[in-house]
Image (cartoon, rainbow, N blue to C red; front, side, top):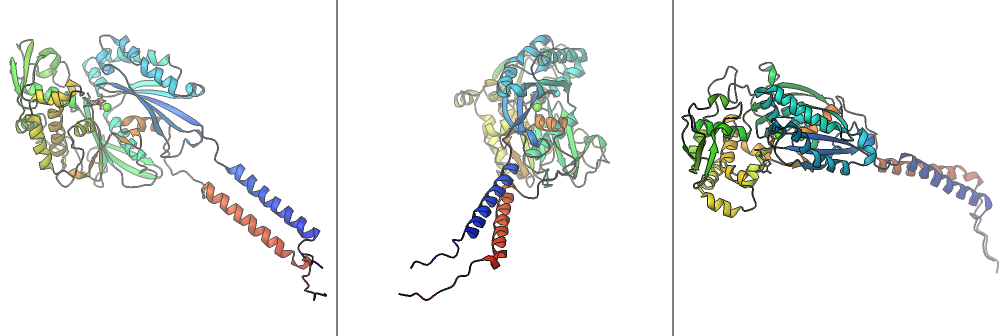
Length: 491
Ligand SMILES: Nc1nc2c(ncn2[C@@H]2O[C@H](COP(=O)(O)OP(=O)(O)OP(=O)(O)O)[C@@H](O)[C@H]2O)c(=O)[nH]1
Ligand SMILES: [Ca+2]
């Protein structure tokens, strides 16, 4: 006779089936209720109206996580054709028109149903600061034209304004540290070095800086529950295009018909206009009287003489503080790693000098050899590079080296702390992201609360507890279990 399995009683079968259904139902409900929602994104657009050109950046972040860090990313950038908006002072309507193609791209990149709620900002930097100094009504007219064009876009236009140098420096620092996830984690921060066409910024946190010695260089932040005393300074006219004007002005003081410039390659020969060269507040007060209309700009290609003329645009002697960078500007002791972007990157990348473990002496030797290379040979070796950029790399490399070592006081020991960068995790280094994070209040002063467990951990724990409860339940029914009696088999 076949023995009947004692577990196959109706009671145990019903209990088991109900138990299994209960576990499956409990886990399913818990998982579905708490599953991460399908990602929806929000967008923000910032136009960087720089001195040399305008660029548009689109940022994206998960819709339900406005207040979290490390989540805002650049999804698209667009370089506006033509010069910076400050160059349109005599034809302002063209400044507005110039933005059209990039705005059209933005319309296609941001989903239609998000257009109305997407904030659009325009921030102008040193080019407009200079135009404002030179001719404030001209800068107002340019802004008016640009605002009119942007108001016609489907986005939520939040206005166009000139950033102060302090804002430009501070927001560049916020961008770099936000993208590196340093702010939320309270890690040591990275300093920011930005070299534009018309101004240059240095921003870093230093333990011996509390702002008391030079309050105009101090920006205090409380971000994610941490306090930062940031040192920042923007040097107007020390962007690389205006610095070049100053170096040329230095060499044309007597109004000569020809100059032999050590910062340009041997064989370089261009006719340039005095009135164009001196058309900037950075040099206009030095315009030589009675100079001819043009001068012949010849290259000599001598790095050490170029160093001398570049140094002559800095004042290293005057300082009314305990320590200075240059031109009597206070600067605390350099501290921590630095990210150097925009023209620092373009130039050092072209010169194959982004590796800062290369000793400074070697950098100087490489520049010596590069500057002395004949102009024809340089053009032949780089047929794809814009001739305007190509002609200036010897000057730009020499200027960057001087600014970093003599200006900001980087030494052989601290130079390797600099990293020449263009992007961090896919987003461009620059002030625009920090500017938008600030205006949309996306970096909280206090650390946000986060759920104690990640989703996967939560699901596993719910499942394990449900199974344990079921086993306990079965065990608690032990008195009802059918007896398992082993009877002798009768044959
Ligand atoms: N070699 C090279 N130079 C570039 C490139 N893009 C821009 N530049 C030059 O690098 C310098 C700095 O460029 P940006 O950082 O865009 O300067 P900007 O924002 O227009 O100027 P600011 O208003 O002073 O910040 C300018 O002299 C530009 O002409 C590039 O792709 N390659
Ligand atoms: Ca810039």
